[in-house]
Amino acid sequence: MEHVNISFMLGHWGKRSRPNDRGVSSNGYVEAYENLKLMADVAIAIEEKTNKAIRVQLLCDGNYSERAQRSNQIGSKLFIAWHLNYTPGGNYTLVIYDHRNSSNVGFARELATAIGKVLNIPANVWSSWDPSKQKPRRGFNNIKHVNAPAFILETCFIDNPVHMKRLKQNYDSLVDAIANTIINYINP
Image 1 (cartoon, helix red, strand yellow):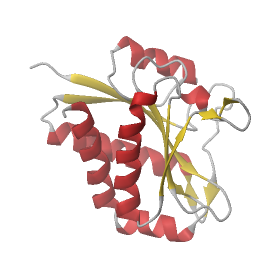
Image 2 (image 1 turned 135 degrees about the horizontal axis):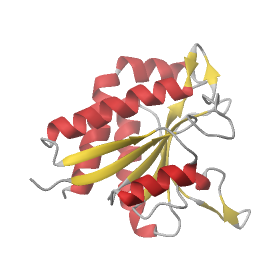
Image 3 (image 1 turned 120 degrees about the vertical axis):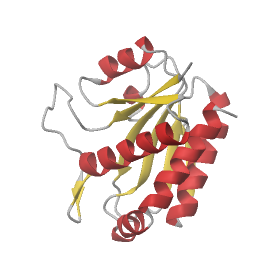
Image 4 (image 1 turned 180 degrees about the horizontal axis):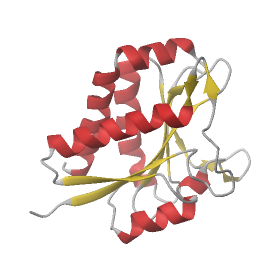
């Protein structure tokens, strides 16, 4: 049976420059651990729902360019870098698409909308290009070496206790919403 490869990159894990970087810790949550669980559960859901017609490569080790290279080597058709946002007072989900391929904005909107609906928070979509600074946004290094359509997913705000409570209370629905949106993108 032929299958399609996609890649999920865990943010804040395994970078040689900062090997103990686990991202933001807030309200008893650690970004890398929360993302690893969500990322892995979405991967399992995708593989189960598609009978492994879509296979998910979890990229956790190495720097960003090494992870991108692994994604490119297996011919991934989609690449998502997973993070949780951290900004006092933040209240939205965010999907950032690679500004070099604006045709991906539709999937970014669908993914942000699906997450926002489950968590009952506004959905935002940004280009990786910051027009006010006339340069790529912080975080673009996560995706700049990837050949596949690439996105940065900021599921919600780790420092917002309401967000994290909703994430935990609606966890299975969130996993399903993300998995179904990805499956529909790969198999329209």
